[in-house]
Image (tube, rainbow, N blue to C red; front, side):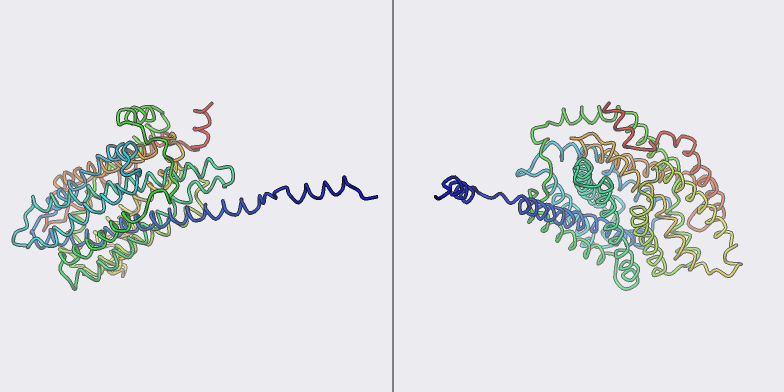
Length: 465
């Protein structure tokens, strides 16, 4: 006698659709990989090009010194003042967070910024040296830095948003929240290495205007790439599409009322502003007094960028678990020590020990110049973790604005310090005293380093509770 019940069960089983959960998970993983790849392409190009900005800027220094015949103080004032658009970064961040352009709120701003930069550098490239003036070059550099600041705000916002998504995802390890920050840091450093290497070669073989032209072409390529990619491929959150400027501003102010955010940003900015920068003076000392070859200066910049790249790797592998306060404080102490080393260099002690001036400039000067920026990587990761969801772009922009303003204050204080110690284009006898004063001011912020949180996750949990 046939088993009807068994037959019916078999028929039912065959008609029941089989759901392949493994296949669905595999598709999800593949989609996630494509999104991650596209993000890294966009951010890699963006930060690499921004790192390459050192290529034309080395040409600017020689163009101002040799073409416009500026003295050290005037050169430094112009270069510092050109960073004024960087101070308005919070406004660009609010615009990027609040206003969507064709349904996108990051890539269009990157394209706009790249276009403004290309316009600036191509403009300087095609202006005859005889027609160049202090005011005209300043305006072009202001336009270029306006574009650069817009690009940086959009790129930093993408990094912050992606970091938030990674840290909030239960399927990803907690360490991945800082992985993208380290990636873009290395992309920027690679761009800096290549830019300085090419600049050191180019400065002896082509005119500065040609360097400006080449970089303008590179920015034009970045503009085309940014326009050709749609933001949907980056899978960014769209929670703020209907948020207005007033609400974004109020949310930014609310976020800044959190002590762990406002105090740490204030301390970080002061740690830069309080140090009088003597970059223009050191540039003239190396080129005018020591007669260091341009190629050596290029090598010095390359070594500085290589150390930036290595710092990104070392921090990502070995120091991410170390409290940010300890890392930043250690960097601050190292800065002061190396400033004293510069004093020994200028006094001729290293030269008397058999170390050529060109070797010291090539190896140590580039490292000293970029050491102060080592603090940015751990602090950006800390800020991204502390940043409230929804205003990542505004907070990161405010941070970079604070750094830009602090560096401007540092530059102006450096001009005052150079005047105080009596440094001119032909007299550098007061430079060692100026460097000792600089080293002393570098150590002052350590007394208030407690304003930087030791553990961002503990602070966030306390706030949520």
